[in-house]
Image 1 (cartoon, rainbow, N blue to C red):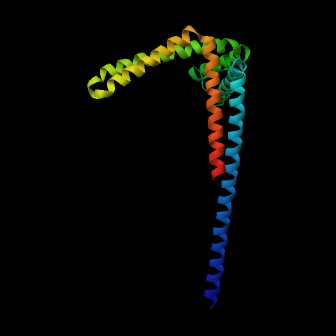
Image 2: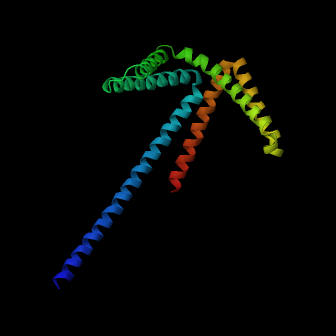
Image 3: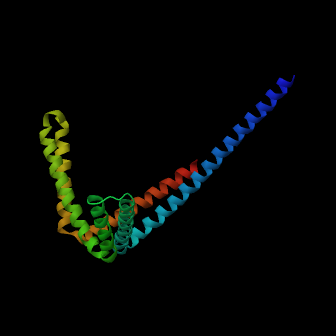
Length: 194
């Protein structure tokens, strides 16, 4: 009989643990939902700011990138010092710190060269993709035409960005803003539907 009572108590303990586990899962789900709502609201606000103030936003993004790079450089340098590393690790950390300070001090410089860099990257990417399309022409079969056309479109976009970098930078910033805005609305709708 004592075994039966112990089993009953043990069963109640298991039930309480299961209920506690469910409560923990429900709390975690609520926290996750709250975090998702906050993230969507931040996306919404950043999207609106990028759409309305593209030039100022680009400078701000350069400053934020500078802060991130500077912090990363400082952390790498601290790790290198703590681990008593020399040479490459310290040099890379110092380079990150210098680049971060430069981004913070001259965000407009980065904002002005960013479209040129993007244009060059797109042209190089288009050339590589076009070369790959021709190299794999037999494998691609009927898809060769669309692969080659896509590569040429990417190269043309790169040239357009290089020829008109400043209006392109504003346009790209606005497109990023619109994308964030749409993503935020989609996230909020999916959260509300749950």
